Image 1 (cartoon, helix red, strand yellow):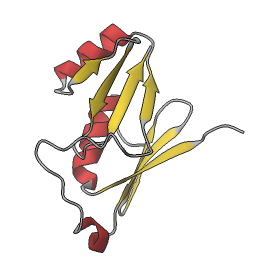
Image 2 (cartoon, helix red, strand yellow):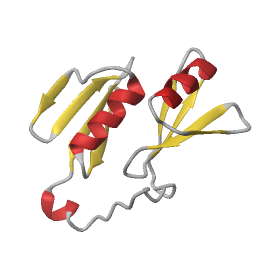
Image 3 (tube, helix red, strand yellow):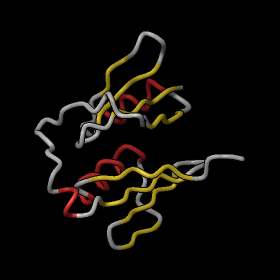
Length: 117
């Protein structure tokens, strides 16, 4: 068995699509109403819009509050951590270097992700 996809429910699909397009450095491979899919190497990353009635109850601040207590964290492996960190900084994505050799970032809705070499 191997992981085929990760699905992230999002409030603002357009904003998160733009963010993950910058993060992954690639355009979506599939799109439908309320749904976007990216090729993320061995798996796909799918963004699914939260239904309006539920989304209306979710407050996203600017800047967003980190969702560091959520049971989900996306971790992306990269061949060159320093080069990837520089690329992400160039497109405006801030990362925090961790002492164990990875970097954490946050998407516009506060979801924490990691890049690691």
